[in-house]
Amino acid sequence: MPMPPAKDILNDVKFAALMIFAVSMVFSESVKLITLYGVLIPVFFIQLYRRETGISVGLLEWGFIAFFITSLFSGLFASDIPEYFKGIKDVTRIVALFFIASTVTGQRRAGTVLRCLYGATAVMAVFGIAAAVKLHKPLDIHMLGHYNYTAMYLIIVANALISTIVFSEIRTKLMKAAAALALFIIITATVMTTMRAAFLTLFLFSAIIAFARRKSLVSKVMAAGFAVFALGAAYVFKPMWTKLASGESFIRRLYIWKYALRAIVESRGCGVGLNNFKYTFAATLEGGRSIYDAHSVYINTAVQSGVAGLMALLAIGAGVIRRWLSIKGGASVQEIKYAALGAALVVFVGGAFDTTLHHETGMLFSILTGFMAGLTSDPEV
Image 1 (cartoon, rainbow, N blue to C red):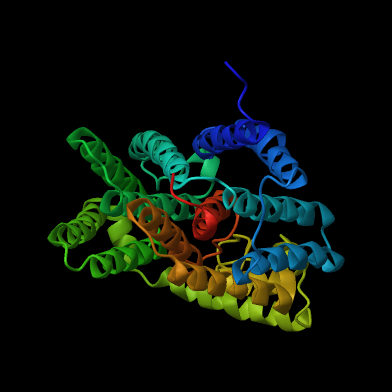
Image 2: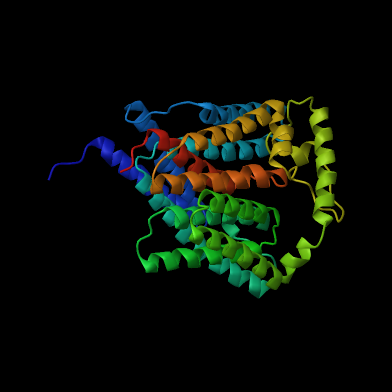
């Protein structure tokens, strides 16, 4: 039996590595890093060198490139260089994963990566729910960090899973039941993080889905059902209900934003360097808690990377909208297109109240956005 062409082998390796990476984001930091730096990035550059893949550069791609460059140059103004290097590693992963995912051939392969993501997240969410109940504290998943970051990640996965349920052609009742069960587990886990901003994007995304499939009674019932379930779970889980009735965190954010705007002025709009917000302008909240970021992806980007960094971020957002509106296609195309929208809502709408484009949340956004970016030149196979 003849060996397959090297081009096909590289595509298969990249596909397998992306599946492993999707699972490892909630299970193993070491596997994630080995997969990214040991397989995905080398294979991507080999394909570029062999001219077996290419990148069509538009507003979205330029936005990611500018985001990387402005983040890189923010180091010129950083007072804590080790922290800056931690930040630039994070940005490098986010940008690299976008371009890698945009070269994945075949919507079916992208859909398979999504299914690996759903399964791994649902399994880890079960462990998170059990730990939160046992310890009587808000839910967090160790690999995702603080419960705010956990909630952002879970909502992106939940939105993507809704798009799969609504748009993909799930053929068997068992698969449909498994998808619905995974979604309910993930939404329950998100409620237990007690993060309110994440649910704004879930409800907004559900409304968009219901409108997009307004002729489908099933879509309307499902969107309403998930919203009712989320509200019911929030009521049952008292810490979430208590937090919904409190405006304390918004008052704290106003304090942080006022402080951050002063930091932008003091840096003359040039930025203070990635991860240098706390170290350059030290401040604490009542109770002695340190402020590590500006609790808004827009303000935080302007503080760290300056006005140029904020413009790069806005270019990514505008590029997502422009690319999303240009994409037409069948079931698998719509599944990926709306999954990317769900991620973008978390990053850019939820980002008004939280610093969203970093760590695993940023990497997952990049993968889903990259899959969408590849749709325009990628025939369905």
